Length: 149
Image 1: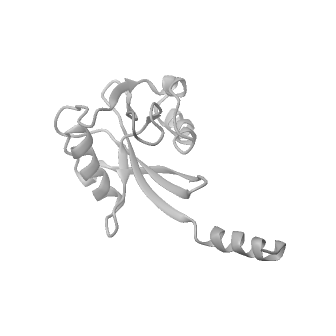
Image 2: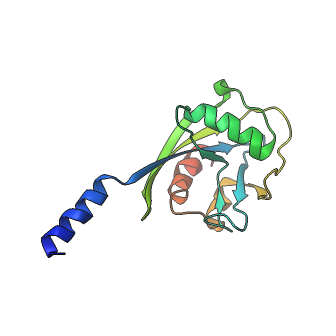
Image 3: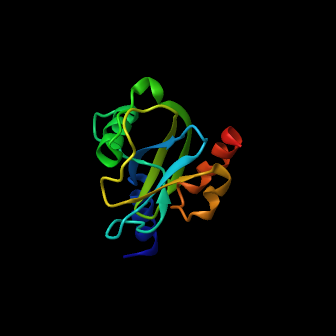
């Protein structure tokens, strides 16, 4: 393969980078703590902490994905009206580009329970940086600090 052919092939691949839409939420309790979850063994980014949420399915809105994921992962019910769009992260991983809207939620029904072998922790915003997070999640912390501290 010639050098110019290799460059064209690389550029063509760059045009077709997979875009992954993942919705996340900062659940905030009455003490203004934020819920984070540690990714379990066997999953990508195992051991790192993240905001609850998950992949948005084809033909699914981010709010609907969060309502579904919060029920599946944490056993809580959230009304769409209680999900406030807050900020977003855009991060280029080698295999895909992640776009992650972060919502704020102050109200839900039920008790938060780890339903997918993840460790959960309620953390004061000022302590969030002490928990290692994936590269896409970490830039969301300053906006949360501005809101909650």
